[in-house]
Length: 480
Image (cartoon, rainbow, N blue to C red; front, side, top):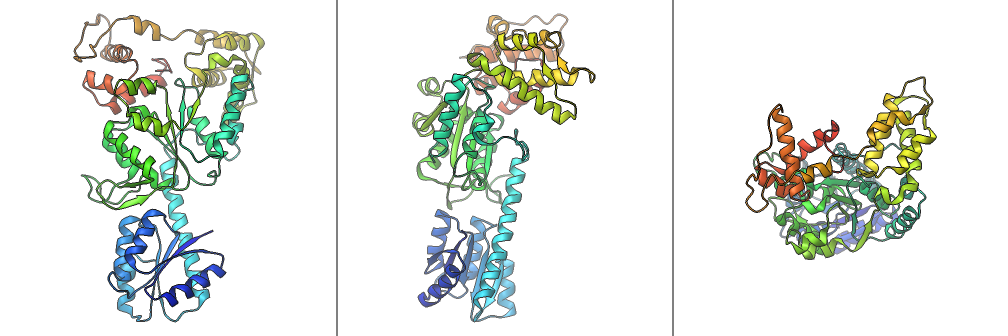
């Protein structure tokens, strides 16, 4: 049901317009003046605003200008008994959707509101699609949804599905933990798609991939001119996901300053864009993920204790794949089927010995590693074959070099950030030496990217891009 905010200093006119809209099946909120209307808009965004032009204090024209500062996509329709071409032009230039001269028919107002709401809906959908375009794992319309996304029938997976179903019915904040590659984002999407918010947006932010300033702007948005390069107002994920779910991936990598702003949103359900003093209400369910030991990070002073408790309302722990080996055959079959469909070839299946080898493997890279091996096997299997033999996958089922890296000794002292040893450079390329240095530093700092980047004198984003590139080339473990 659409919610319409009616603003008029005359009570009789407010009630008349409200009655007309309620008879048309709309929900109506009223305000006696522009400041009260702005307060209502900041706390709970309506679908459309219908305002009188001449009001004491702040006029309808000024209200339009203020609304544009809060939300450029919120349509405002102006009513006036003193209509003129000049005033109509001024109002439309200020950003109003339309201009109605009193007296007008109720049907005329209803049709105008419906057009305004439809235009706003399309604009919002466009913004959400742009925000979603760079995300992973979108899937097609035919992809499994909700709990059906979770493949497996082991005891651990059955318990996880039951927990997801219970949590989905709530509106509480969720903290999903587990090793890298276990499928935390898949579980987050399952929770959203099984929840009452399933019809609203699901947006995500990779907190580890963005610098502090970029992450702040991505989450909360910014005003025009807030910083160099901010050429226009930009909504953040908390605004775009209004009514839906926001996934904060790798929340443990957020800087202390952004942690404080995030804590306020979770406590007060309100925030300000970067460069703005206007408080905006937020109706978003937050799902956070982390592959780190957050209680340990809290004890070490790296993560705010109050924020941890705010996030850890509904905890979900995803078991590693080696702890639910019974699910490996089902997962392998699922991935092979998806990849064969994508590649346009008949569905392959793993031969018995190959499945036995997959089930016996320890899977240090968890489900992500299994998916990569399945894709590699499908692509490299001859088009004439109908199955995937053990010989195809055996070379890939080897322990990753994580332990070798850890045993190589410290390259960077954690307290000073100085090099403790000089790596052997004979016969090695510069890129290999760089990779070795970064892997040693990551091992020394237990995988903490911010500390590693600071010790090496590079940015967190630069570090993340290098690791991503090496993973794609299979030069480093997928769990890194």
